[in-house]
Amino acid sequence: MKKKSSFSTQGQRADIGDLAIYRILPNRYADAVGPFVFLDHIVPTLRTKVTKEGTGAHPHRGIATLTYILNGEDEHFDSAGNYAKVHSGGVQWMNAGNGIIHDETLNYDSKTDSKLVHAFQFWINLPAAIKAQQPAYLAIEGNQVPVKTFPDGPGWLRVVTGSYEALNAVIPTYSKQFLYHIQLEPGAGFTLDVADQLEVAAYLPTQSATINDETFEAGDFIEFDRAAGTLEIRNANAEASDYLLFGGETYQEPIAAEGPFVMNSKLDIANAYRDFYNGDYGTIDYEKQRSKVE
Image (cartoon, rainbow, N blue to C red; front, top):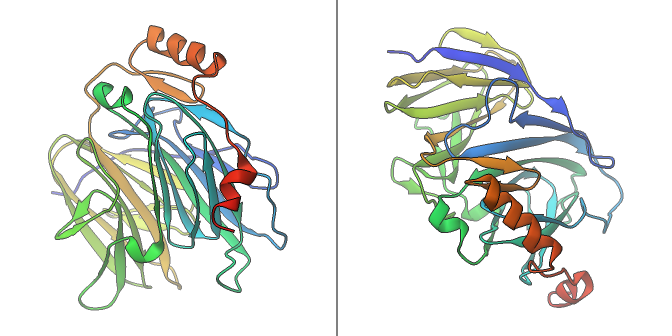
């Protein structure tokens, strides 16, 4: 049986500097899809100058941040001393654990001639026991992201988190979750079987799609019912099109979210702010971190 859409909506502008950004999640209908509590879409932009200015150093606690770079070069800094540049197709993943400060700078890809910048940032809510752990970090280049080429050649699926068939993403997971990037050629389709009680959503970043016989427009975020069933995506466009599917099991613990923190109670939030203002999350030494690899 085909799953039914619960709602669809478009994001709200949340620009940072010259980066045009749409805040997709949370939205007026949903605060989370499985463990995913946040999604920003950095829309395709041409950048001709390299900047060393990031989005601004800021704290996190209780979540893992995941930046998926379709096009460009993402430079990561954090107060635990982690530093890396990740290029087109790669992922920056950071478990904020019990508190960290980080910053990211998104530029065009120095390894290619393309000046295009296009990316997504997700926040993944962590179980309460994991929120108390030390921060962790992974820089994952595009060739480390598992990919499934469909047998008859109409497209492919990249496993950014979770698993698909025999493929397993590099990123650790602490609950049942998945994030797939799917590309379909014109006229091609893809079908996914979704188990009962799993939350699942689709996001159409730049092109329209037909999903379970409903037509949705570019920029649409669509959430589906939680009954077991199938999702069939078809590309009716004249060019290859990209789609995101993501979700997982429902978060079972209380959620308290404020600013850059996602915890389990208002007291946890207050403690997160207290520790941040006390300087417990440390600081970023930008030049020292850059000098390690330059």
